[in-house]
Length: 104
Image (cartoon, rainbow, N blue to C red):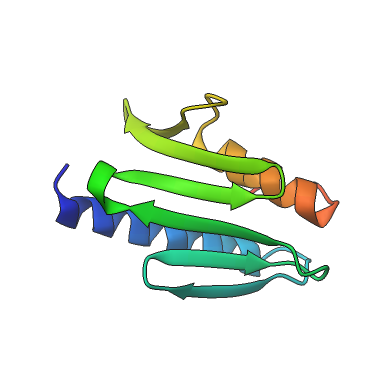
């Protein structure tokens, strides 16, 4: 994957996450720009997703830690937990919101 393909794919993923969060019955503010998607919860905590162009990774920062995901066999996989991106994002959003959340 070249840098252009990486940017296109991550843009689509971030848009899908924004759409899914919009449909949740939760008060989560979203800010997107500069390759970063920031989700801010009522308590002020945040989940931050960012693209790392140099190594073609997506990084997720949450209360529970930092996670680096790489593309493998068509899926974005976390190097630490082996979770796929949808499961990881759903888990950290659930942990920070206190409600069961499923995205993507």
